[in-house]
Each structure stands twice: as structure tokens, then as C-alpha cells.
Length: 86
Image (cartoon, rainbow, N blue to C red):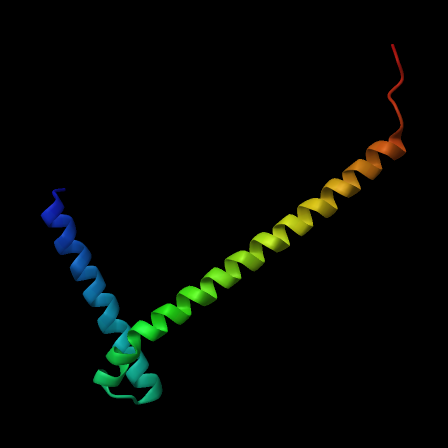
């Protein structure tokens, strides 16, 4: 697929997504189309910030869980003692 085809397909997909977003938000809130399009950049920035914050929190939660798991594993190894020598 050539570059021009990719650009056309990407533009069409973006247009469909934008149309869906605007229509669903209009049905949900009753705002005008122009108001929705004007607020779109702020909505996108807010969504990106929220997504970034959720990702950072998920990473921190994962690190905490991994530390707990490693500590428990170390305790189990110490409790088991050294293996018998052959």
C-alpha cells in the first residue's frame, strides 16, 4: 500500500471517528456541532493527560506488587534453608 493510499485511508478513518464522536456527544449532551468541534482539542488534551496518569499509576502499582512478590519469595527461600548436599 503506497503512502498516498495510507494517507487517504487514515483520513477516512479519522473522519469517521470524528463524525461518530460528534454525533454521539450531540445525542448525549444536546450541544451544537460547532461547540463540540471547538472543545475537541481540550477534550483530547484532557483524555491524554488522564490516560498518562492512569498509565503511571498502573506502572507504580505493578512495581509495588513485584516488590511484594520478590520479598515473599526471598522469605520462602530463607525459610526453606539450604538444600541438602549430595
